[in-house]
Length: 273
Ligand code: DGL
Image (cartoon, rainbow, N blue to C red; front, side, top):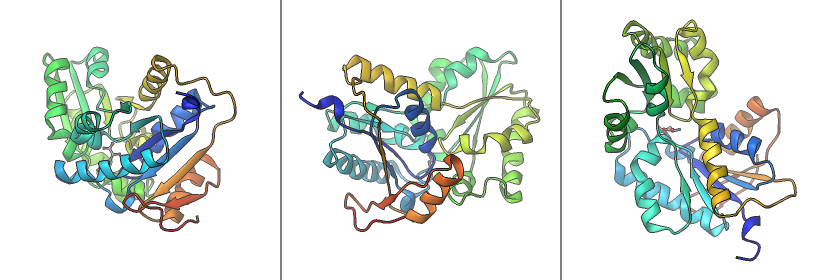
């Protein structure tokens, strides 16, 4: 186990969405090193089969393991619901996933109705439906597939009128149906939080899973005694899509010009931002 604590944490998503979880993890665990993989060339995952998602996430896991990570955060609801059981069974490293926060939303709801905005893949998964019947059997859950929203975030089109129209189409029926909580069941959606609040006129309590996933990462590190590093952490970014697009997205949300390298099925084929 020598130097084990100095190994980086791997974080991945189908694209930019998992950055919402990465930033929160960096905030509460600033001394850790991170490697982030955005599989933007294969985004969205939401309409892919489980077999395809297992294949893609295995590739990313192998790449992260080659880069010596000590744990992996599956910062994607769709990949968690489709593949985390498989990944945990195949690899001995700890995995932390993210799934729609149905349990806390049910507890907080006063109206007895909650809205869940997620991808089609997540909504149709056994994983999600099991969670719903375990934690929300006594309330009404309005689950809506936010088609087009992942793509809008990937293109940094958060304020585009077409994106606002989509948000209205998905969110207003939840309010009409009596929901008082909105679960963001996709890690891309926290980047739409301002627009969602505007569209819902403050009528929904919006639940962003990023802080609780980051706390879970910390708990896992604590339980393995992993978090003793005391020098400033660094973060490396890889994408299977356009490095320039991820670079610009990161700059727009953080003001930092990160170098972004290219990831291609487990091989880094070129670098640059
Ligand atoms: N960020 C992913 C999630 O949390 C988006 C999935 C997709 O690519 O459709 O579900």
